[in-house]
Amino acid sequence: MKLTTRGRYAVTAMLDLAINGGPQPVSLADISGRQEISLSYLEQLFAKLRRNELVTSARGPGGGYRLARSGTDIFVAQIIDAVDEAVDVTNCQGKGNCHHGETCLTHDLWEDLSGQIHDFLSQISLGDLMERRQRQRTTARPVEGLLQTLSLG
Image: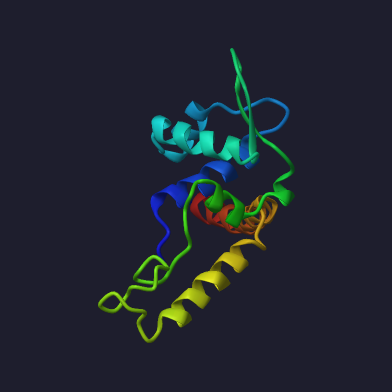
């Protein structure tokens, strides 16, 4: 699957915003520090996310970004689409010139797979990802407690 760092970073930054956001806006510098993504790169991504109405911005001291709507109403595919990223598994970027300028034998298969992946990502919201993360953290706590108990004994 061809998904560049642009799409991955956009989803990561939006999930960070969903987790750490709230009534107060979150600065890109904070996201940059937590996720180790270049601040200038985040600025480019968030300009596109704002134009696509996935985030809102607040200027001035204490400014930053908030989700434009609930995390349950923002889907991974929307984020990827907003930053002009394509989910594409064809070798021709969907152009159909994969075999000496002509459509290869398996072009339709790979194009259908790209559509299926996009449909799959259209069903996963930031809320789903937050819930999954919380479940993983909750499940890990008893194991961490057991490990601490064993190391103290």
